[in-house]
Length: 286
Length: 286
Image (cartoon, rainbow over all chains, first blue to last red; front, side):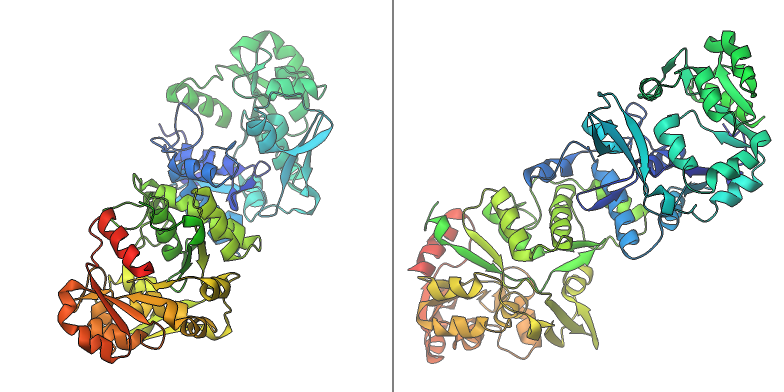
């Protein structure tokens, strides 16, 4: 279902959860976005490729390599090609464009930066990489802090600031505000670029009835001392987004959301199927 | 069937046909030796792992990577781990020992050298890598010359010269003399070390009735102007091997073999099954 012309859409994607395993550069968010847009993602897992096999992992295990991060056989090809091209000196944005084009995508998929940027999470007094927290510890431990290692020295990848500046509408996806959206905004220049387009920016609340539909977003906000609610999200995005889309379940908090200075749109935000996802997209770009 | 105590055996393996594909370091001979000794090799193909799947190749193809060299999903894990360890600065011999130990091998598997050494084949006036000739062109083109790129600057890997010097018996396997055995001997010091043990060295002729049982050995010898026969092999190895084991089919050429100065043992050299392979091994070490 086409809401907008795909060639007019650019997805700016988080790289803070990138990691290196087995000497391969893994970009989980880029791959999830690419596989999803290519309609190749495994719909049940929500990550990785449909029809995937897992035979290489058995041998990696035999060789004593870490196995806490599951990599499918087909998916490994993505990491192999990405790593090969990065090692040759190709920037991540160019590699990502090649992979997206190989999947037949006509929209843009751009990593927010070509520079190394790693989301680090402090748990039990120790900083660990995001994937160690999210996959290795199954995000089953309270976070004390989140920081984006080396973010000060990053610059936005080619096309990122232009896409924000020239977009008819900027949508902040209902992703985890702490570890998916914040690392995008932390790249010097990006937060300012989004704020400069505030009237054109619509955020979609990832928190519905005080809970995240997927993942630990609500618990993370809570652990960081923020309100895990549509209102908390409004406070977080108020300087960036002129509009916040919240779920019907939170309709009773509309006035509190509006008190943060954002226009509030109430709709069904739960993307149960492609029809509802399309309807939400229509609202967000409207 | 145990002919000798495996812990007393060391295989010194060719690396001239190593290649880099998809940014991965591939060592086909090392892997074939390791998988064979681990009883994990695909018996029909004679290379790669039994029960292999090939799903990563499809995605490598989608990404425009070369697909003329087939890599199984499990096999890819071997190349990934090897590449990761080499990139960290671990020598190939140490990586190979780790992989062999992971397969439960108690014998030694040592690459002849830790240094880069590449077998180059001249066909149609152009030098190409061995795998491009062997797999890419399916060795379906006459060779004009063979050289071992950078061999002058290689040194034997740790343990190679010791294994040759201290072995009760040195066996030159019935591999392709031109592209499997010669690159071993071309590493400075190896030919001399083998020659110094000539009385303890037994070679097995890979040529039976003027043909190779597998691969292009006979045609290559012929194309290089040598006699593709047990006698040609005897001439090639006479300075190195005190004994040449030839097949019963070539019994009528025993006196010609002996005229080159080597002791000639005639037996069934065709390893149709493990029993006959064991019998041949017994003869070779006797």
